[in-house]
Amino acid sequence: MKKITKSMAILALLTSGSLAFAQNIKNIPEVKNSDDKALIVKADHQELEAKKKAAEEKTKLPKPYDPKADAEKDIEKMIAQAKKEGKNVIIQAGGNWCIWCLRFNQYVQTTPELKKLVDDNYVYYHLNYSPDNKNEKVFTEYGNPGDKFGYPVFIVLDQNGKMIHVQQSDVLEEGKSYSLEKVKEFFKTWTTKS
Image (cartoon, helix red, strand yellow):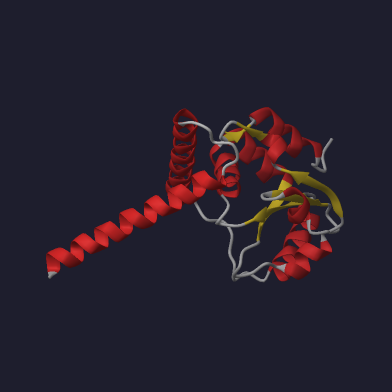
């Protein structure tokens, strides 16, 4: 009985996988020959591999977003600190689910000239957006920039808490990371110092 059950389970898995594959092929317009189907399978495989690598990378990166944080109170404290220190505030909005958010954080933290530029000129805050805590009230206050630009998105506040800039992140990207020159330019543009 065990052998039959195992065989049936394997057959069911193979059949369901074949059916799912066949459905995917049927839903793709104008797949005319086996070479086209092979290209589709190869593309699907590459996409799965890329997702797997991103998931592995995500597990290794620090998680700076805290879904349990009281963002309103935290940002008030950041503004008070910025005023006291003569700096602006950068809010990096995103979440620990977002590979590009984690990559940006890691990039800034491990690139000495960027880390110094940020530490010398800004009070920095990671504003969480996730199913656990969407921080809707805070995001609404800043015009919901994630809806428009995706994540991460950067909100720059002056020392009084006034929003002075929103920066989308995709223009700062380069390959699977970020452009040092573009990120430096972004940070330099919004400092309080000339």
